[in-house]
Length: 268
Image (cartoon, rainbow, N blue to C red; front, top):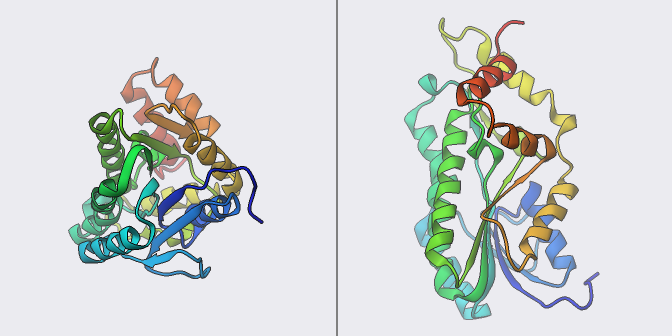
């Protein structure tokens, strides 16, 4: 049911076919907004679906030509599409690293570039990154690097587009969705790592039930999107906010030591 007294916005959302993106799409549609869903598939049969693979420039260009013809403008762009991978950087093929960056970095760049001509003063771009953009993790280095690049690109864009278009970067902690299940897990190892890779992944996966409910993440993101004046970057997740605060007082080496100790797959 649509909620009343809401000024209808035209929202373009990538990665809305599952997980956080799907939940955001449903929330904003219930509020009465037009949510144009860009994805390769449309399992929920959403009304304003436009087929688009964010790694294919021709598809992106076709998608925004269609959006321009049918809707004329974009009020809010939400770059949510993401791709995860874990494993030892030494042993992951370069092509797989490129695949991650194609979605998380180059995809965001291409989508944003095509969307901007359709955005007017007062528009908003929301880039969903990850706390991995700020906090490194063992055997998640490629994913962390892609999210860090994504966040830095977003923060730079905020300065470039100020004051016409608001650009905000959101870094959620782990959310209870199927993203972890779909993450590519490279279990290759050698004498250097032994069983550390497997143990490290098991440590992270064991916290599945303790992750943030998707409804909580949606509520927080929705609140941020509605702000007239935003901060450049938001961390979603109490523990990660505390850790970010502590980072101001402790050296980086201290953070890396304890992160490796807890999540590096070492025998305890």
